[in-house]
Image (tube, rainbow, N blue to C red):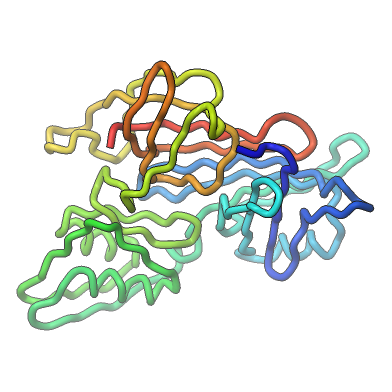
Length: 286
């Protein structure tokens, strides 16, 4: 896996920074930490940028400013975070100015979308979920093996889109999440697809997998319904690969552990001036 020529692009409401040229080989200083998890709690990111110009600062300070962060190597820069600024502050850092922002995935859609739904007769939950997504203004992706319940006597609801999704999904034992601005619907504790990414020393694995017990606040870890329980898994560290996301199917290959897992939680850290770009992931057997 190529680890040189680290590149990023940070975009917000009409401007983009991060591009390098032979004349300017180093982009504006950025530091980021992205946290994602297999829960319905929105993902978040902390991003710092140094010495932005007044026009860029004015845009970032606009209410509910939307941002996109891509990062990778050369021309391969997948999106690692999409969201809305929830906090911003600029302060002196020596002779420089550091702008710190906190970003939340799906913040506006979950906060501001209220729905009024009424269906008579037999109604499939997939249609209801699609209608909620349309009202939220987000694309929706359904997992390869999701199954959908038919409400025999119709369905009606007035209130927040978030609660509407809860009601539509629980009937089919499905789970919803917003990942990079896309509403994902999948079976609980499952993967979105059966395609497996390989994590190995050849693809960027660093050190050896660490055996851990994994639990998640608000998520039932025991798939047979016996309450919240810890489950065995592994924590792995590898060079940044933004193509791998929450719920993805993983083939882990190492001398300590190997097999198929899914990504339960993920932290992506990077700084374009110093240090490595790293992912720290917690894996649960798929």
